[in-house]
Image (cartoon, rainbow, N blue to C red; front, side, top):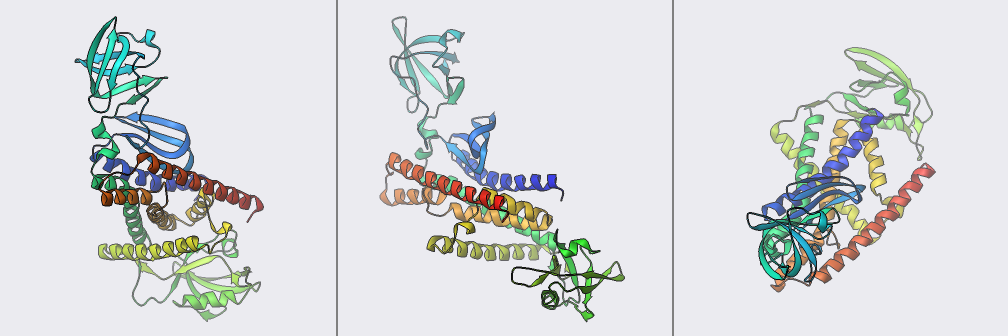
Length: 424
C-alpha cells in the first residue's frame, strides 16, 4: 500500500471499531425509548457536528474512544427558574421553543416571567404575562434555546434511569457486543481472504516480503514457490527453511524459486537479528484453497477463541503488575502498529482489526470505573438492592475512573512519543 492508503486505512480501522461500539449503545438506547443527545467519536473539542433528529453526531479532536450521551446520565439542561423572564413560541397550543436570552430578537413569541415550570413530569410552564398568569402545556420534544444552542427537553420517561434494568443493561452491553460481532465477521473475512491449507501440501509459497530486508532487494514476489535453499529441497517443510536461513547470518545463500512454471535462483545474505539469527524478511505459507461456508464459521470461531485467550493472558499480566511501561501502548503505538500491518496487505489488516475490536469489547467489560463493565456492575447492585444507588455517588465513581484512565492514556502516549523520537 502507498503512504496515503496506509494513513487512510489506519484512520478507518480506528473509526470502524469505535463507531460500531458506540452504534450498539445508540441503537439499543433508542429502542428502549431513551433520548440520545449526542453520538461522539473521540473526546475533547468538536471538529465536526451534525444534528439528525434528536441526536447530534460529533467528531472530536482526541482519538481515544467515543461516547453516547443519554438523557438522565449527566446533569440535565439548566431550566428556567421562577422569576426569570423568558419567551416561548407556541404551535397547536403547545410550547415548542423556550428562549432564555436575546428575548427582544424573538419575534412571534409570548414573553413573561416564569411563575412555575416542570419540563420532566407535568410538561407545563406558567408565565406571568402583564400581571396575569397564563398556563401552557409543553411539547415533549420542545427545545430550550440559550447562548446560540438548542437543547431538547427530556421528559422523565425518556431518561436512562427511568427504564427497566434489563433495557438499561442491554443499552450498555450492546457496545461491547457489537465489537464481538464485528470481530467474528472480520475473522470470517480473513478466513476467506487467506483460505485454508490444501490436503497433503508439497510446497511453500512466499506470502510476505518485508520492506528494508534483504528479500526486498532481490527478484522475489508473493506467490513464488520456494524449491530449495543451498541445494537442499524444501518441499512443504517451513521449519527446515527457517532453520537454514537462521543458521546463515551474513552468509550468502542461494534460493531456488519457481514462478509461473519457470525456475530461477536468487542470492540473498540473511541479516542477523538481536539474537544473531539470520533473517531475510520473507513469510511463507502452504498452498491454500477457498474456505467453505462451514470452514469460514469454524475458523472464525477458532480465531475468536485463541485471540480471547491471548487477550486475557495479557490482561492478567497487567493486573499482576508483570509488565513495564514500554509494554503498554496507547493511541500512538496502536496507530503505528496498524500502519505497519496495513503495509503487509488487506488480509493481515483485516485480522488485526478483528483483534482490536475483540480487545475493545473485552476491555470495556472490565469492572473498571467509567467503563461499560462498571456500569453493568452498578446495575447488578441495583437489581439486588431493589432500588437505585445514589446517582451522585455513582457519577463520582465514574468521573474519578475516567480521570484515571485519561491520566494513564496521557502517560502511555507521552512514552510512545518519546519512544518514536528515540527511534525505538
